[in-house]
Figure 1 (cartoon, rainbow, N blue to C red):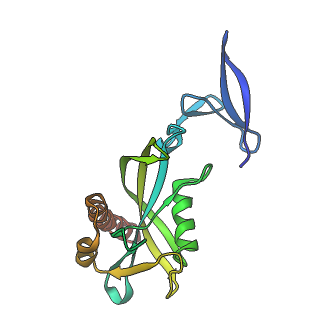
Figure 2: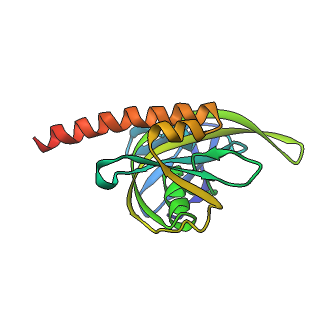
Length: 195
């Protein structure tokens, strides 16, 4: 979707900069709300991030072959430990789209995002500059997986208890635990809809 910058007079004497899209007919005010014919709709929190904030998307990916649930974890290098696969969100890309892209490109996996599992903050130092980070983790169901994940040097499909033991970060252990809780709730809601 293309949008262009435009100067708009919102109140007398107070010029504001916003974005207008002729395709959908919405105007985004700098305050972080969409105005559609006078109706105010709040934007999701990730849309209002500081431009210096680094947004990272994580995939709590699972599959259930023969009724046994397995979680996907990766090891990026020999120096780093086992972790939940994560990707840097590109400019103009949503965090959901980024995680789907990563699993398709690096993992050769077609997946479906079910729910957001959790968020976490942090700080990263790049070239001597400290930047704030936001991590958003998603619960994902594997639809189709290849036998080889070419983008990850090492990967494993493990049961929950084994995956938690291998993960090195306390944050990621917490996110995986949260993913199992969210999955149980999602399955209950799905069963209620069927009956």
